Image 1 (cartoon, rainbow, N blue to C red):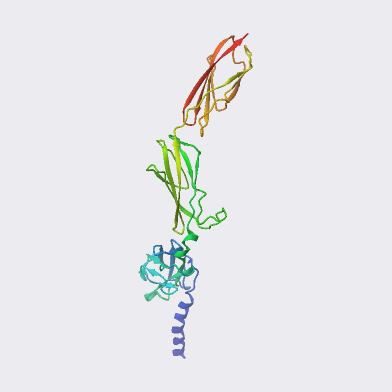
Image 2 (image 1 turned 180 degrees about the vertical axis):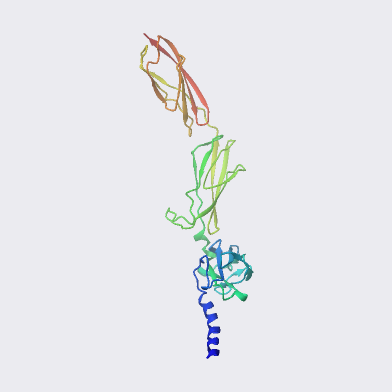
Length: 331
């Protein structure tokens, strides 16, 4: 009877270990048998790859003792389907990073590949296996996962010395279908080449040119599949024209202590630019700066005289223009 009991115990141990193989992909903080001497954790930096012979992913394998401390253990790695692709190592000592690359292929359909880690040696029954999954597509799927690059430039007229805005946020992580981006792929990088030996990164950037000319601006986007796409626009950069200053005064006859209205709406900035300030000098020792093109000055002039009223306008490049009008005030 004692011999039978001992035999039963020996048989049960490997069965317990075998039943623990099928865990969730994401391991808990401590996994394994109830007596939990060890737990394995696995992470993958890219969970989708193309079978183009270049794309790969890094898998990090770590082991922890029952108190949650990292520990060095020997671990065997296996790929399922069997030998579908290659691992940089099949046996490692934790912590370790192993690279997985699927086989190059232009045929077939996408499939999920599982990489499983199992502790070997004297600790084989003290920890459960863990696994991560990677979805792979044949290289012919490249068109469906390639992103779409697109960008807009403002203002429409780009001038030297003034920063223009380059906005690539309309780019898509995959192909645009019927004018819409329905992709779940994220864009991970935006790289700009402004055609004047200057570059930048980011979905929305600013850039100014120091000389007139035609510049080929290229945006290259990269999605989370590692695929890239580029688009180019030619930007014509010119020198901004100077603004013009002009204004009218009302009423037509101005008396001492009248309210006087000054209207500079006929002042203009060059195309693509705007007037930012209106600087008034009323010729009577007073002045006023506004951002509005018109203003009313209560009891503007306290005595009869002819006053030289001057207006200076300042555009968004800091360029100025000045004009003056003689204003006659009667009793």
